[in-house]
Length: 393
Figure (cartoon, rainbow, N blue to C red):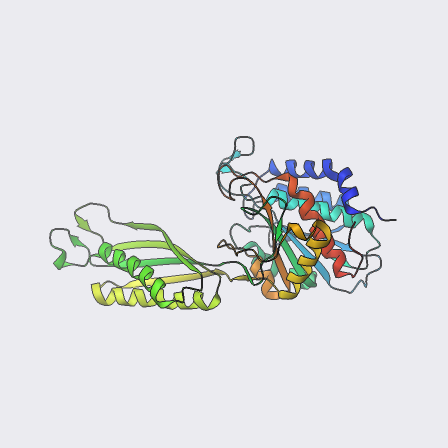
């Protein structure tokens, strides 16, 4: 008789915490997760899984083929992230490198421990009528790791019928689970603007062009257009975090560079703002005579949860944790995730697991290892539900 997950997890807890602490102590940034990937691969092989390494650089996949599953049947995909952040966190978790500090300031170490725990339980069952793929993705923080794995043939090598991922979320009650019905995370676009002018002496602006004043006009116009030309019910956040121009206080520069980002939960609003940015550049050129080049690099689309998968997740949470722990439709988060690229190719859902403490990327952030059993139980139930098995005990 198969040991119920909760009973198994009680005996497994020490091992799960060891995985977490080991991963926490080796933070590596996007596409440099060599030690992390090697460690995860060794754990997966120790569980008896087939491992494919080097997908998208440092990405890897552990494959569990259920003994009662059709070997040609598609897999259920469960994904975690390998990378840490180039930031300093608490002293007991920050690793100093020649490139600067490294810290798991978003909880990817915990997500890996969750997925390894789920893999350990399912691997021990073996008589599963389902195939499960445990995907460890590089460079999520760069929003480029999913694309790299897809370009490297992941979806051909490992055909999947659905894919799921989860993320800790300070702000939801600790141990609760939420799954958004629709947009879960925002799109992300990088904006680079170049304002070009004929610079001149500040005492005689009429003899040239004022790129700084033009840049200020452009920035103000963008925010005005955003509030007046897009539907206020569609969320869109436009933020400019970089501006550079000039070398002396009395000389008008010939170039001003501006950098920013656009986030939205609506592809319609996103496209509209792209048009407004171009229009603001053209208007500024007309008013000031300064060519304004607006370059928009699309990073990832809006992460939309599949309605069928949302229902599956909700059922899994109710069966494993109880209805009182389910937040059926939490507000979407304005952060972005390249899991959205997997969702463009496959049905799936992105799940939030609540925890206390500082928000992700904050220098005082710490992943709560107490939610490892919560996340693992949900992922196990999603795999078993896909096979039409009985709920886990």
